[in-house]
Length: 364
Length: 92
Image (cartoon, rainbow over all chains, first blue to last red; front, side):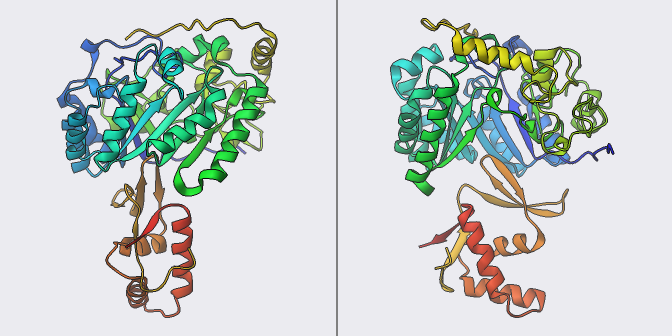
């Protein structure tokens, strides 16, 4: 029995203020086609969007990018977001977080800061980021804590930094983080372009996960550790975004409204823009947001699968990028007819020779 | 956290924050990476965890509000679970 799901209210808005960024991480979650500064929403447009989001039921906003600190109106947006009752989280590389800026952000009312880390040593971290950022991040973490702000950190894990997992956890503890997301790379956009360089070996992952489990026991409540599974090595797909258009939405720098940050790459859909339509209409009625709500869109094997309410058929972006059909079962699933795409990739990864890393870096 | 005494003053751990959401008609606990929609009882208890009230006061107020007695065990159980999740801390 297939049933349709009533449209709920979104809890969280991811506001991508810009795609500009000093870092060039080879797994960047921004799309391959980065938007230019001239296309970005103005301050007034963002202020208006925030009000519409509050009316729609959003209670939490993540200001991110690119690097959101490159927007000089960030403080103004944070002030308004707090007035509207949002919990305000800032997701940043830390580049540009001098003491004075942290103080201004704190005064504006930012509730928590999520700082990225690329590796435990400056040499490796700066190689991955394609920018000398490590020392600035260390300073930024210090300023964040000295201003009494909650510090959360995140590391994208991949072949070149997994061996440093214990050092990275220790570093985040030392820097005063209360939460650390250990996010195994997810392969869309830039990460998919660099998958041969980034995809870890199975053995490497096993060791890293064991190190994570040991660290969880060692640090206990000192730091909350989250392990985001490397889905290529799973047999069932992740319940991506808690369901398409179900609990959150993303607004790209130019005002395009997306179910998640990666979804603009699904070329078979066209996404509406806050410059043309109300956010309320886009959330409730737009074809893109309704495309994969409920279960009626599901083909087999998802349609009759007992896991369909647990994983919603997996990730639509991954389905599109690897099969060309956004409705297809996520190829990560052992039941997917396209499972071989994943298995072949893992297989050639295990047997392939690896020399030095040569990433396709995104531009700034 | 079952060792908490009646005299202790719990509060929502920073930077978490409670928000009454009119759209959903529910108390929400806003945390850095997630939002927890609380049921009525959980919302009513956490709303009183302001770092000022003692657990004894909280129990008294809730028993008065709901016209019931004997809520102490349930409230302690909830507070312990909330503390375990990192939602609550005690004020010095």
